[in-house]
Image (cartoon, rainbow, N blue to C red; front, top):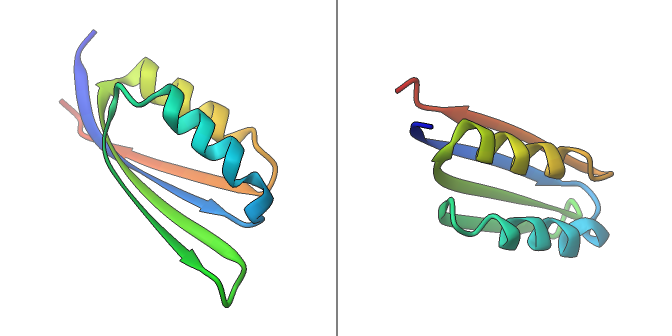
Length: 81
């Protein structure tokens, strides 16, 4: 299957979910090119952007697992080719 490059935006609305988010990201480290996490302490949230290079199936599996976590919102954008 063809690999694509993309970006995933993750908003963690309850920092208690952070260890689960980090565990999932670790499980998919083979498709992660880079990651930037910003804790927004005044609002009690964290925003993470992840650059990925993987198949659609790999990225969908990762975002699906992240999206099932309570208090975690996930959006992604992928190249068309």
